[in-house]
Amino acid sequence: MENNMPLAQLSVLTLNVGFARHNADWNWKNVRSPFARLYYVTEGEAQVILPSGTYSLTPNHMYLIPPFTMHSYVCTGPFAHYYVHIYEADGKNSLYDNWDIPFEVDAVTNDLLMMVRLCELNPFLKLPQSNPDVYDNHLMLMNNIRMNQNRSFSDKLESRGILYVLLSRFLAHSKLRAEVGDTRIQKTIRYIRQHLDEPLPIGTLSSIACMSKDHYIRMFKQFTGQTPVTYIAIRRMEKAELLLVTTSMSVKLLASEVGYEDTSYFNRIFRKYVGQSPQMYRQGNGLSILSNQ
View (spheres, rainbow, N blue to C red):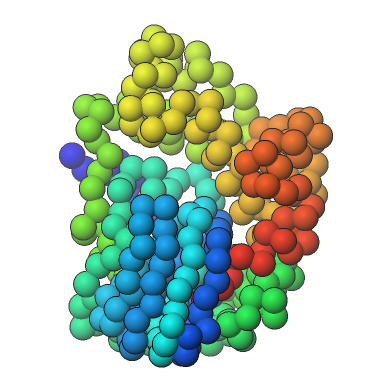
């Protein structure tokens, strides 16, 4: 079964890119970011601890950590890698909705050349230091996005093309989440993504899927592992996290953008899912785990 996500709806941008060399000093704990992280390892070995287990990072392999994934790094010796921090610009479509994407793939010869070229195109997006206390701040993230947007069209086009190629290495080994047997749940997932600022009653979603409410809830949980209500709340909080670190939007307006007219209620829900208030997240506590290389 083919993925129904049109290529034109995939909007990926480079937030940070560079080359880093470490010696037992890449040890960050409980990292969680609204951005995906792609690594190409050139030397040495390190480990990433994910909810699914502990994985070694070795040369000539690429690794992809999805956004909003809690993880930790362990580095006990020399280690060098290229890194790319990626975010999906509009938030209305995501590769991770329809695909189970592998964490590790073998790199091919041209992948290293493309990493080098991406660094050449975007020298201003290199992280200044490995210490997150130095560069984790809202102002720097906003500045990186602004510089990304202000590049020449040719540089934007080439950078986007490189990201597509690198991501395609992972998609070539990905598995579609299609065991449910039809595309009706996927259709409602796209609808949810595109209407997070609106009420999303189960009756509306089940009607779109041409199912009864009870049948829709069962099928949705089989497909996603979550009930529709939980899925919607998590997607709203993830969009809120992304807006908090990539825009200067007020919390009141931001709450409306993710479907909450009551700002106080939004603050309570955000704290429940993220562990701190939107204001604290924007000020830096949420960013302190955002941009470790």
